[in-house]
Image 1 (cartoon, rainbow, N blue to C red):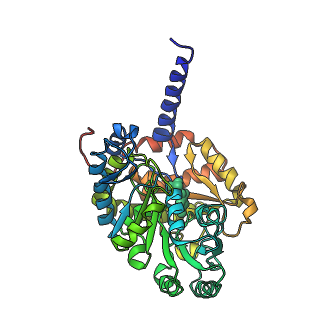
Image 2: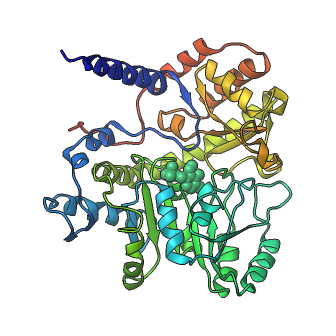
Length: 425
Ligand SMILES: Cc1ncc(COP(=O)(O)O)c(C=O)c1O
């Protein structure tokens, strides 16, 4: 045995511990995560992970790609069907990469992009430190209403018109969609105003893609978005990856293709494709019942947490219409302390800025962001989230360690739901 063979055993042991802990013993409430079905997992492990296929089906810069050319169009066609989109591209390896290509498609350095600010829930891609800024654009934020969870439509119309008058920094792109995402965004109301200024309307559905697919959230393309970018693994059932959908004619879409390849991609991680195709099929078959349960669970959990004494955000708007619940944890010592305390009891979520937090509080913000989508996929329903709210009270208000209760609760949900009852090949 070579000197380094013990690394193998060490790695295998780490993987085993990870699988045991996060997959079997934790209540996972990170709003950007999910779990894939055994069918998707099996399809993910294949020879495709060893291969290259730059280009697109039928037009490759590598040989040996005949089966990539079979699987990639299946993904594109299922994506188009699921989202009633004219064009689909499943190549980008994450939403951040999809955003980079998308921003480059519709802007020139010194263009202006209007998007959600970090405190308004926007993603880094849409702001100065991410794709928008890296590509040399100015960024202007959509104004929000006083609660901080909605775009102020009247004020936004004025911002759009004023931004459109700046001829030096041409207003080229508006991006809807958030990371802290409780309510639909006013795409229908603002898309015509944005287009009047000659700008493109984009929607980042990374967080809510599974709810859009299940028709339980707004339908951005039907409401006027020209392009939608996304992750495939937050509320959606896919392996980690990116997605671009557009309501454009083929000629126009083709003109933008070089920004994907070779713009932001060379190899694009082909092993995602068989897994993604199955995830699309699962969504087409089960998406509506899954998304219905996710939105019911989120609302119920928000109400239950409020009843247990937590400061759940956006009460006056019914707390949430998505998979997320935001809670002000200042009475419990702040978001970070609450998240760490919950982890001691095997409950995993993340601390998060709330709209009233200064940006400087990013490492120790007031809030936590909760997502119910993964535990919904494991089969939890409203009553189970009621039990979880009681555990939150015991852990965070009564300062008890609740690991045993969490293990017992989690033990009841060990099989991924909303998938086909078929043998794993
Ligand atoms: C709105 C939004 N866009 C993009 C991303 C980035 O997604 P990915 O991890 O697929 O790059 C996130 C991540 O959470 C997000 O919230």
